[in-house]
Image (cartoon, rainbow, N blue to C red; front, side, top):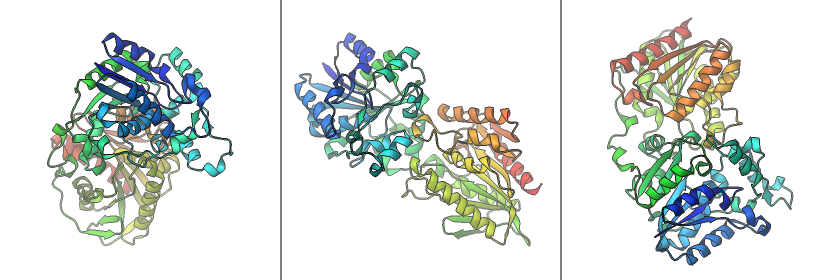
Length: 502
C-alpha cells in the first residue's frame, strides 16, 4: 500500500486536500493531509519560534508513525520545503517526492526565494522595518489571492473558503534556510505543472535545452512530469484530475525529459537565412555589426530573453539567432547591436533593464550611429523589458519590435505589480510603431500574454503591425527553416528598417 502525505502551501492546512484525499482513499491508498504546526486548525500552536524546522519535525514524526512501506510526499508551494527537509532525514522511507506547481529549492534557500508575491519578499528581506512582535504574516484578503498564483478554475465558494480559513504564516517558516542532503537528490521525483499559472512541460524542456546546469538533473529518468490545465490550487479547481495524477506519479508514470535533450540544442542550430558576414566590434557586453557607410547610420538593439544562467556558454550575443539578425541589419545599411544583459533570475529584471539602457546610451554615443534613429527589438521573456520604453517613448526611438515575446508577467513570476508589464505600458505608447512577430505554435502560457497586449493595443489604437508565422515555434529562427519563416523574418526586418528611415 502507498501512503500519501499531502503538504499544503502558505496560510493553509490539511483541510485544503479534502476532496483529493477522498478520491485517493477510494482508490485504496492511505492518505495523510497534513496540517503543520501553527496552520489551519492548529493555528493556536504558532509562536515566534515556529519556523521551517518546526514543520520539518512535524513531517518526520508523521513518517515515523506511518506503517505503509511506500511513502509519497507531495508538497504544494511552500509545502515543498518541509517535505524536502523531512525527506533528507528519512530518505529510506520515501518512494517519491511530488513537486506540486512549485520550483526547485536548493540547499540553503529560504522559502521566500520561491514566493511569487514580490511585495511579501521585499518585506521579509528588510526585517529591520518590522516591529519586534511582527513574527507572522496575515493572509491576503479574498481579492488578492492571485498575488500568490493564478486562481483560475477555483469555484467562487472554494475561493471564499480559502480566504476565510487562511491562517497567518509564521515568518520563520519562510526565512529559515532549507538544508538538504545528497540522499534527497537520489529520490524519484515528479513535477506537476499548472499551465494557467505559467508552467508547462514545453517551457521546462526549453529551459533545460538552454543548458542551465541547475536543471540538468531534470533529465534523470527518475524524474517525471505531468500538466494540469488549471491555476495554482488544483486541489480546489481540479481535485479529480489531481488525485489521478498523484496515483500515476506514485506508479512511476509521467513524461520524461531525457528524450527531448538533443546533442545540438535548438538555440545553437544555424540561423534560417544565409546573410552576408559583417565586421563585429565588441565593447564590453555589447557587439556592433557595422555596415559599409560614410555617415552615421540608424541602429537596432536586439534584446534577448531569459533567465539565462550566468555561467552559460556561449552567451546569447553569440547565439546564431542574434548573430544572424545583427549581420542581416548591417547588410541593409543599419548598425545591428546585440548585448548580454544580466537577466539571470526572475528577480533580475530591474538590473537587466539597466543593462539595456546602458547599452542604448553607448550605441547612441557612437559617432557611426545616428543617435536620433534607434529601434529596440525584444525576444521571448526579454519582451517584459520593453515596458519602460513603451510607457514613455523618447523621440529618438523610432520603433519597438518583439518576436515571440512575453508581454505580461506570468502568474507565477511574482511581477504582477511591477513596471514590467508591456500589456499595460502600450496604452501610453502613442503612435510609436510596433512590429510584433507572432508564432502560431506558441506555448499557451505565453500566447495569452500576447493576446492581452494586442487587446490593449487595439483599445488604444496603437500603431502596431503583426507578422504571423502560422506554423512557427518559439525560437523559430533556428528550428523552422521554411520559406514561410524566412519570409516572416525578412518582412519584420525590412519593416523595422523602413521605420528607422522614415
